[in-house]
Image (cartoon, rainbow, N blue to C red; front, side, top):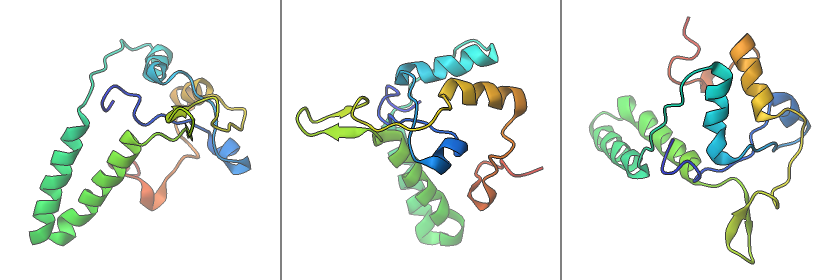
Length: 141
């Protein structure tokens, strides 16, 4: 969780519903992690990570990329992309209030975040293979 966990508000969607359109189903942002802990039966254990930590890591990777670009450029770019998704809201900006609005953000689909989590815990993520886009050794056997 970066910051207070609300910086990157979004409306998650399953691949099935995404194929029909893009966007769906928000449980309250501060309850998404709690939902997953409840489904897995694990004790909730969250701690906020300052967003500035990402800036520091990206800066270090950029520094080393000057000397060893093949080893560090992609990691630095991955860090920048990760930071974007950690801090940019994916909800519609209400021009009148200058705040992000869950109610103004279009939704589509039938699969809730809770249903997706339950299926993933029960059956794994079969069908969610990411190919070359996988990170952190997800595709390694």
